[in-house]
Length: 239
Image 1 (cartoon, rainbow, N blue to C red):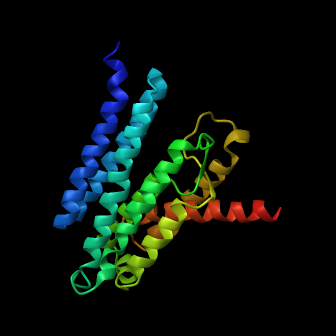
Image 2: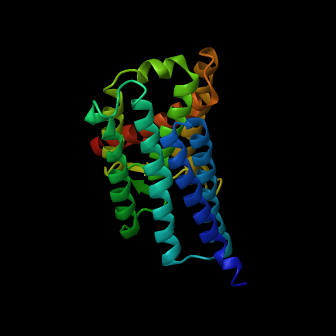
């Protein structure tokens, strides 16, 4: 039985392993491999929380370990993906702003530290969750390789500092963002989530028309998630 209790932490360590390998491949420029490793890390990240709830194997060590793994997988690795893509347009030694994506590592670390000491963030998050920020970059990176539309946007040198600073600000912001985890199927407890899922499905149409890769649609869904929560926050504050 004691061995079963170690399953969540083992899954978290696999998350960390995938994130570490992704960082290595991102530095080498093997972005496709780096992308799929972070997708694997996200699956392990979901599985460790699910297994902890299922097995009732919660621990302070598990919580801290999860944050350390998330910092690497959804903070460090995505930052190096952006740095490598930046160097496609400028030599890193010639332009110091090529290092600007590293601000995401700092933003992610601060976000995770705040999350660990804030007991209120259970069903609703305060600020953009670190995995959401990292996955947005990951799907952008994949779409960048496979979509002329994204490639055109990314060809602007100021895009990388802008997106890095914006995501870092969202990470440590106070904007309420709902969890994508469904605890029950009731409409009352999941109204915002269900409405968002309908919007996400509607976003498939323009992606099909643009003949864009699958990662482009998921990237748009993550952008919609940020805008959706920000809009709800502004409406709530004015009400």
